Length: 247
Image (tube, rainbow, N blue to C red; front, side):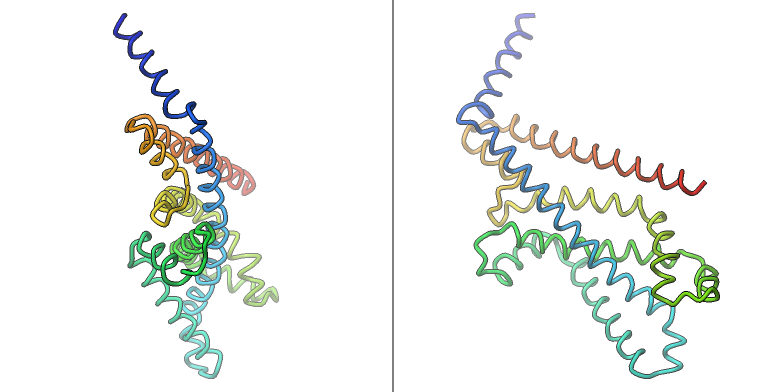
């Protein structure tokens, strides 16, 4: 019993040292807001890039034989765009995220003083490569009869993609897409490499000031875990609603 009371007392002292003294809890809050900000903007960038790249790649895969037979400028443009997209996917998926972040910060945007926008762009471009392949797999999984039926009703290619194919593809890839969002959230923890005060960096700064290894790191881990659990719950709720609308 005395041992338990001693542990509780030590926990209180450590909590006060790490979070109450000098209002260090504000570092955690500030870091959390920066993490959420980077994740949200990078998510929007990633989805935008993913939609464009997946549309180009899937259009090429579905129409290359027909367009190749016809030839002309249209096939050349689509083939060139597809090659650019494949190069982008190869580079982004073939290099570490932290290396990409360092290249963006120290080379491409070396003149920017604020690292947060750089991190948003870097993580967004990185996520876009994975989102693109997720969307492409969903589009390619839609039965070819859906395209033919839509075209027979007078829909053009873009209208068919917008109103028929993409909604079905989105439902099919939602679990994989949700997993990519979770990965993106956790990947932002490397933003501290370029001096950004994110959640992980905040915990590390507290550890450096208090020389307490356990509590700051456990606090950061629990916050990430909570965010992932909330996101997982929200995605599950969205999946159930989409299935309910299908009935």
